[in-house]
Image 1 (cartoon, rainbow, N blue to C red):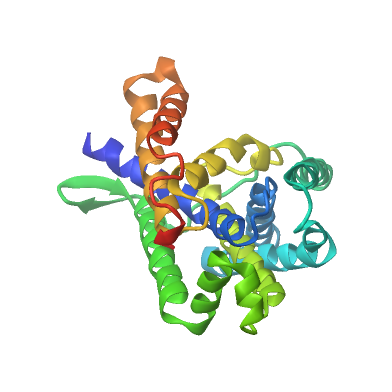
Image 2 (cartoon, rainbow, N blue to C red; image 1 turned 60 degrees about the horizontal axis):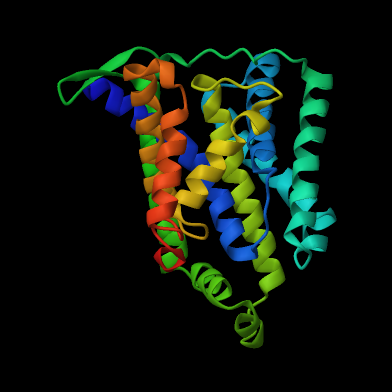
Length: 285
């Protein structure tokens, strides 16, 4: 039971790393961005290419995944996203889902339909003793990454001037503009940060989920569940939701394999019926 719980937590941390950027951008911009997984895929492929073709080590490739996804996100925000901030949600959905299919076709054309090869670095292979259990080093690394990112985001949002401006813009964009806060630049910086975190999560997915061109569509529902159940516009909410989703999914597949992912959707429906605004509403940012 302990191993199943730990593996579920590690899986949840990975979902959190990818989905937290979507939560922040959705809560700040009210933009329905279904293409968030595409940025995760871009970062993951950047890391895979750097390691497989150019011999980069794992940790510099992780940094590259963040930078590449952030640059791609920034470019698309300037060219496409900001044009639809005030548009109908259906327009936003059509744009972002269109980007998903464009990304799938593009990555299939350039890299083929197969999963990207990945070999764990020696430092993260094998197991280590933890609380009387033998747990995988890579899964433990995912847990550490999730905790570090959570702590960093909470410090950024709660202890810095940038975070104060983000919270003000989340509460009321019109008033924030009236007080001199550059909301447009804030949107850009927040979107870039969210895409960079997605890219980091995409690179970390190489050792757990695997990476193939259908990645942004295959896991889209899970990212949306984490954000909606946790509470859009929060950091702690998706963290809690991702942990619960990860544990429920892993435990369900271990103890009730015939149910598949059914338990996740049961959890989602029950949670949203009881708490329609999410586990931790926006004020928890």
